[in-house]
Image (tube, rainbow, N blue to C red; front, side, top):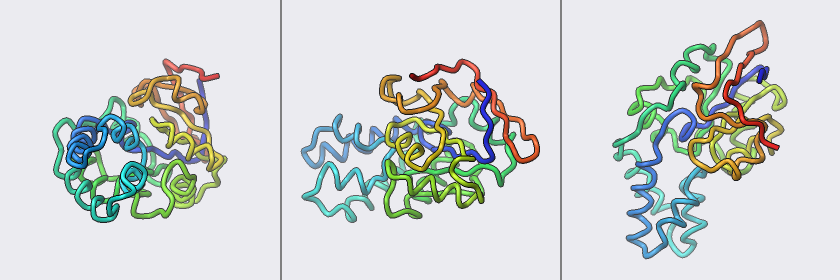
Length: 220
């Protein structure tokens, strides 16, 4: 499959890096401490800002206070945080003004995880600190497009969660799903499915980025 775009927007966790072990450890421990179902809490945590997860799973708690605790634990837990296949190579092949990272992590957490994974800090980022309404709302991706001076229809999003796919589509963008976190049937809203960024090669031709996607699964 060949796709063209003027700008690329990448989610971080599950697309550029694997932080799932750390995410699950932190949220499981927090859930146990508060007498909540760990599996339910973890399922809510993927692809969303932690503050929104906390409001959803524990409306009786002080979300701002708990968010500080959870965030620091996530920053401190670096075991198993690694770059996913193809991430470094693909980012290195792109001009820095043609892509941005759009993550539900805060900026300190994003910088910490990228550093643990050995990936460079993208010069353009939209983090949890920069938005009022996180994914699945379109605000994060609309801000990413604005950072790159692009209109939504010229942007291509790489996402691994239903919430992120919903955010990209709501922003009017095409979305390629990375099947690293959720089963295929939960990624149906995307335009295509790949296993990892190792399935993507990029070539910049004037104003367009030509992307070749191998091992693509078409999603009806």
